[in-house]
Image 1 (cartoon, helix red, strand yellow):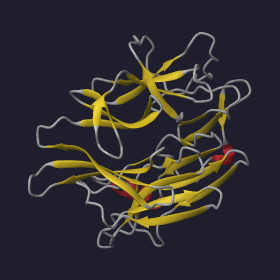
Image 2 (cartoon, helix red, strand yellow):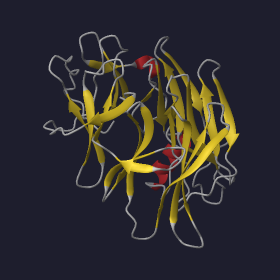
Image 3 (tube, rainbow, N blue to C red):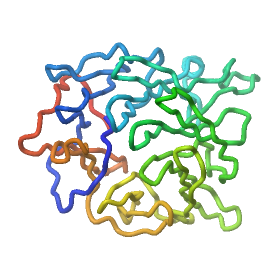
Length: 328
């Protein structure tokens, strides 16, 4: 479940261990989860049951991406052409795999496919050229009215910013022809969407200095360019950024970066100016600011996990017996 805002818990000693948060205010829509490839929804008896109305026809490859309103969510799925390749070959090498997106309207129980593969797709089929589309994870607008992602189709050197408008049920495509090529294995630019706009992270390599440059390009809700800022520059022994999150602190929005050595910092998205982070990031629902929160923690293998903090008097978690819990 994706709650909608980050804040800080300062000086807190964490005693609970890391279950996935499935908690909500009683006035909010039912909670969601994915287990065993099945979409689950909270029932009136506070258990989880299959949500058949919004079960996609393809395998689910990530947790549901929930809008801040709680009324819609996006699912990333595995296209049939990828499934067939993996069945035949056992693996698909390095790099991101092509995905599709399905959007569920929970108010009507309607499932829409909002991102598909090209006509006559092919993927790692010997002498046949690839014809597939790879995509970043989706990012919802703060008001839940639109969702954005980046994508690239085989044979094209241009990545596109895609914006799906919920009211119109239309997808808008904005070419990102002027941005640097991604360093390393080509992959779609990661996307965040906050109060500053749609933020596209670009990690590129300077061919002269051989330094890795991380920049943040901001676009408005229509896809028009707003600003660009360098977030980090580093050489071979530079500190590694492990996580990037949007965080609200003192009524301002920042990009929160988690470094392997120096820990968390706050970065102003439009200028790249950095300052120390004064506490531990926590994820919570604006509808229930004093309710259950999620505290971020880094495990021994540098994986980001969330741990549940249940205040006294908060509603209990749903019955998750039999379901494994994973990262939010």
